[in-house]
Length: 308
Image (tube, rainbow, N blue to C red):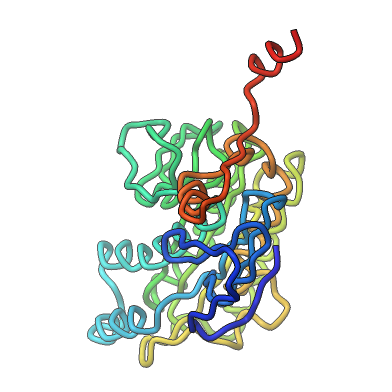
């Protein structure tokens, strides 16, 4: 996979290109500078894996500004507002994950279903029966059991941060553990979102160190309480911007590292395994629109009959 920077203009080289959802993918090595994937462009070759890079998580400034105006009224969110605010991040994670998985569909999960009825990314209450307790997550991918889940956590005022940040760390460790005990190959991600004015000084440094110790699960046999991906998002309600200075540059907790962490773990554990051993529906549509053959692996019984 090659990533091309670009400005969004449509310029085809005359080779074979086709749209897949909001992205333009090239077929058979064609170069399509307008194949938008997050902040970069993608080129697909026929002999490359069907898993794609995961675009970076970028929260629209307009969304944060709108929520910032609500927060400034009381310098806090109510409980429901806090949950709804976390949904802004869930939507972006679900979209980026669906792109990585081949442009598959995004659906709202059933509250009681333990598996979805189709191959899709779920954004909403994703119920997982874990090794410790049942737990709802905000984003999930469960084609044959849990392969990915993420949860967004918000602390939305100074009092709540001081009172609850240690309990949040305990909850994150438990949520990672309950998944990994039953699904050791699962990729678990967390997004922690706090207004910049509410977390400062030594408390900010202490909380960041505690989160640092919960991220970096690099193997299915690693300790279960760690997450494969985690980000701490400090945001300014006054202008709706994400703080570019904290976590510090190089920290694994920066939001621009989240997709990189998910992609590394997921590709290592599942690349080439079903359903990633054949084109997704979106990728098939792109190939067919381009007049290219759709090549899928033969089923085992078909191979046996051919060799008989």
